[in-house]
Image (cartoon, rainbow, N blue to C red):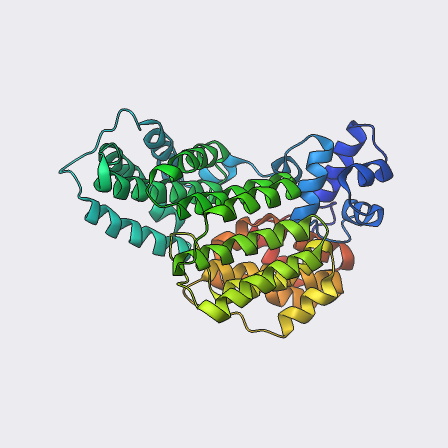
Amino acid sequence: MDDAQPAGVGPRVARARRLAGLTQRRLADRAHVGLGTIRHVEQGRIPASASFVASVARALGVTPAHLYDTHAEDVVEQPSTLAAVVTELRMALDAYDDPRPEGRPLTLGAIATRLDTLAGNLRADRITDIASALPPLLHHLYPLADEPGANGDAARAALHDAYRLTGSVAGQLRQADVAALASERHIALAPRTGDPLRVAVSAWHRGARYLQHGDFRAGLRMLDRARDHIDDSPAGHAMAIQLNLRSAMLAARAGDVREGDEWVGEARAIVGEHQPPQRPYYNIDASALNVTVHWCALPVEQYDGAEAARRGESVRVSDRARPERVGHHHIDQARAWTLHGDRERALKHLQHARRVSPRRTRQHPGVRETVIALAERERRRDDTLAGFARWAGIRV
């Protein structure tokens, strides 16, 4: 491996901290994280968790992307066709009051069928296919969503789905402006769809912002308000599960894993008692597998690698229809085993994530931090780790 110092989150935290004139202790106090955690992350000895990055970025007045050193152009520069697709998606969002549908007008039924296909592509991690297909659907949906009555409600519900898919795709492609615009659109549209549960769906999406920017308790309060829109229907039970899982992550990142476990326990109880539909809406995953993935992830948010690894060893997470969820689980387990001091198991989980969800594994900032921590801890040549690092574009 290259002997140069790896440029992970740790060195960038140290630089930003010094520029702000803060000691490690003062940063720890401001960010509400442990002094030892600050030291170990800056030294590259442990991988920076998402909660750490969000909290420290907020305390330093920078963005999480700055600490991760991720840029939108990293995703869309190659291949150039993807950059063109992102441009079309951005233009389609701006065309709500000047739609330009091409060809024969699509019926709402035809649009719903295409959205179903795109939702399947999202679960299968085929992001480019979705980004290419969404702009024409948006242009066809805008006139339909202006209609009154039940037909208009159905069209607005479909547009709500299209906006949410757009936001998810843009987020994966690191196009923050597109994701933010799509998010604003579906939040504003939700009360006009004739389906009160869609307000809760939008609130679940909003929760990701609070996670990203370290405003964990405000996010929990927002989700509590969203529960006012939950009913006792099968879809309502599914949405309660999804809101509980988001609340669990917010609580864990706020430093209370016990509260997070309580939210996961409530979600698991709903699955066992009601067995609601796993996907009542696009992007929603109210499955037992998703509950398990969240349960395993909670301890690693507070650097409890031993407990996270114990939980991971007690379950089996496998589903070919959900490569993103399965890959995410193995990325979390790689972090857990890194913290636990077992580099071989950590690398095994990274390789598993690579097999099931290669694109997201390559782009996941936590993967880079885990690889850097493994390399820094050992500082010896390891062909397997070096090969993974080359594949993921990580300098170690």
